[in-house]
Image 1 (tube, rainbow, N blue to C red):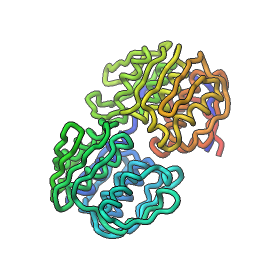
Image 2: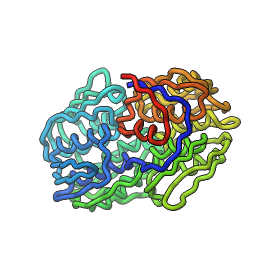
Image 3: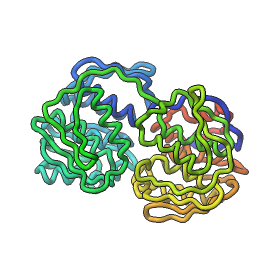
Image 4: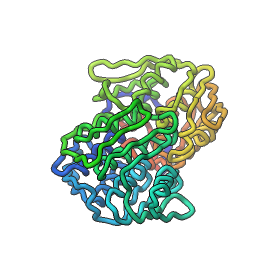
Length: 421
């Protein structure tokens, strides 16, 4: 689906979708707990559906209702011999070690860009443990012949915290104690905090030794827990950026005490010289001519696309640093954002691990490609607020990966959209 957006002011109050990061983690933990758990405030995006199906393949019984799940867990009782993560990086990286708690063959598949997203961390572990596997030219499909074992795991901390999270879920239920040693500086600590907090809620104890190593006792058991998922700060970024560009959008039901790493968006917005407000349980940013900023993405790569739009429309020069992991998301978000926003008049210099962005007063109209990346598409939607002409976004339906009703919400706020199948 393609959409053409006519420039207009957005205003109104909305509920931000539940955190995708917390949704994955809660569903997995509940699915590993012997007993009944209820997970509330669930949005059935493609990524979350992939995790639900993956846990069903590992023996969980999951009942789906309008906005909640009833889950009867299983300690990795293999039901299917194949897991398809679709396009979800979290699903594939969480599920590989979890599924391999069961000492039986398993095939992992994915779609589109996911088949090329790196899995070297796990492949190195398989080699060290003598686990037989097969892969083609890409990382997926991946066929693994046997299960993982407890022990010492040496893992880089500057690739993706998702590898560490997968191990933190799997290792406690193996026989024998384990240790994860982080061999580089750990990036995305906020995501590890989310994982450790969720594991604790479901009865799993992990000893965090200053993020340099994690000690995990074996033979632990997950216990059932009812859990309500909070609003997603990574999704709030698009609307807070819109506020800065002239919208008047207020976000409801955000947890200001959240451990989400992407809560960093609040500080980032203020670094661009806007101001964040939280009044009457609503979150919003000032509409103001923002100024260039230096933003570090080592802990928050998912904020990259939205902040690239803001930087492109801010006065002066912005620098994005430690942003190399933006290149290994659903698309290369550095090259993609540069190439597409330049079609609208942006001025961006690309570096290997970041960007220099020189602000312009407004965008022109034009045709730009989402590169099948949900966060890129939603960022381009917000760019329309400061465009002089219509913006056509190709493959805009990719928002279903994380925010299936995004375009409906955009229209409800006053956005003017023409749809083209």
